[in-house]
Image (cartoon, rainbow, N blue to C red):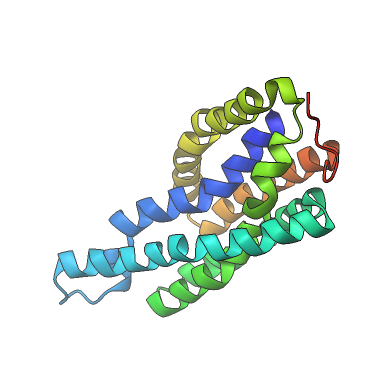
Length: 196
């Protein structure tokens, strides 16, 4: 259940953070001051939409790879990638270029999808058949309460205290490391479904 909660935290962290920034920060920081504020905000949300539009493709590709070579392996690769990617992500966002921010989101989605694609099957298969649905869904919901919500507050606090987005990147990397440890502790259940 801890692995489910931590994995879901990483899965949604970037979207939670980016959604808030798209509404509050990006319209004024990335778009010309002469632009109508409504248009600036809508353009900011277009980059956010790109992330959601590309999600199904990554989930299908990495879900398939998880089925073929192991959900645990693909998820672990995603955790390691997520330990590095936040530093690239925030460095690009700090440039203030909307074009670069759009590209880093678009090309960064596979990093997230490495975990997202195989995650649902990997987590649910970690529970015996008699508690599979309640166990997996409880982990998802606990992640929203214990980590998804506080993640924004922690990120804002880190940025305020340190004055750098690299502290936020470090926080995401630490969460990814915790996910990696949890993934390591789980057994890869591919082809070994419990039909209890």
